[in-house]
Length: 463
Image (cartoon, rainbow, N blue to C red; front, side, top):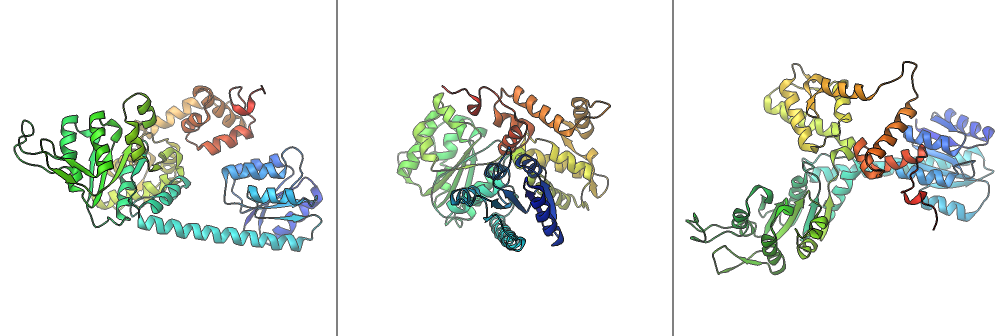
C-alpha cells in the first residue's frame, strides 16, 4: 500500500481517480485545489502526487515548484487537458516524473502511477545503499539527514585527492571527525594523521608546535624538537580553529603551503614537508579578512574545497540515531544494560535546539546513562538547555498560554513564525534557526500563511 494525493478541482474526476486507487489497495487523500494539496503535502509525506495542470488559485506547476522546496522524493504525475508540450516539459523540468493528457482511461493512469512508484522505490533503494556505503566508509559518523548526506558526498569526492580542505561549522558539529574521515579514505591513510588545536596554545608555543625548534632557540628549549608539519610528513595535518592564528604564524603556514618547506625556530636548515593540510574553524573568515585579522591569500590557499557542517538544529533527523549511538557507547563503558529511551525523553531530545551541537548531546546522554535507574532513559534523567527536563517543560508551559475554549493549531504556528521573524529583524534564515527548522521549511510556512514584509525582495514595490 502506498500513500497518494489526488489534486483535481473537477469533483467527479477526482473522486473517480481516488476510488480506483483505493480499490487497488492504496491510501488516497483528495484535494480540490492547489492550496489544499500544498497544505496536505506540508503535513504528511506522499509516495505519489497526481495533480491537474489548471486549478483555481494555485495551479499544478506552482504546486510542483513549492512541493519540491520541501520534498524532493515524492513522485509526481501532471494531468493536463490542454495538450501543450510546453506545459508538460515545464512540469518535468520542475520535477514531475510524467504527465498524462485528458481525456484518459484509468488503466493508462494506473500504469503511469505504477511506473512512477517503482521509480521512486528504486531511487530510494539506491540512495539507501549509497548512504550505507558512505556511513560504512566513514565509521562512527552518524548521519542520515540531507545536510549530512551532502557532507558525505563531498568527502567521498575530495578524499582521494591531495586538495587542501577547509571545514566550516559551529563548535561541536564534528569537524574533526570529518577531517579524520578524509584522511582514512585518502591515499595517505597509511601515513600519520596529526592534529593541533590552534586556539588551545599561546602564540609562542603554537609556532614551536607547528614548526619545531632547535636547542637554545628560546628560554627552556633544552633540546631539539620536531614540529607537527615535520611529524605529519607523507600524511595529513589537521589545524583546528585556524581562525585564531596570528598574522605572523599565518604567513609561515602560507609559505609551507606554497613552497612545501620551512625551518625550525632558531634553525637555518630548510626542511621539506609533504603534508596534506585540512583546516577547520567556527569563525567567519571572510569577515576576519575585512577586519584585518586573517590573511586573504592564506584563505584562498585553504579554501580549495569547503565543507560546511550543519548544526544539529538543522539535522533533526539525526538526533535520535546519535542519541542511540551515544547510549550504546556509554552503556557499554559503564556496563549498564540500557535498552533505549522513553517516549517523553525522545520528545525532549527532538524539541531541544542543541546550541552546543553534538558535543552537548553527547554530554547529555552520558549524564542520562549515569542517572538512569532502569534500562530506559526517562525525561527526568535528561539535562538539556542548562536545566533539567522539568525546568524546560515549565518554560515551555509559560510560553504557551492557551485559551480555555481552545485555539486552532495553525493559528499557534503562524503566531510563532511571526514572532520569530520579528525577534530576528525579519531575517528568514535567522528566524528558522531560532525555531529549529530548516530555511526550506521556513520558506514553505511563510508562503502557506501568506506572510509578507516590505523589505523582502518579492514584496518590494517596482522602481
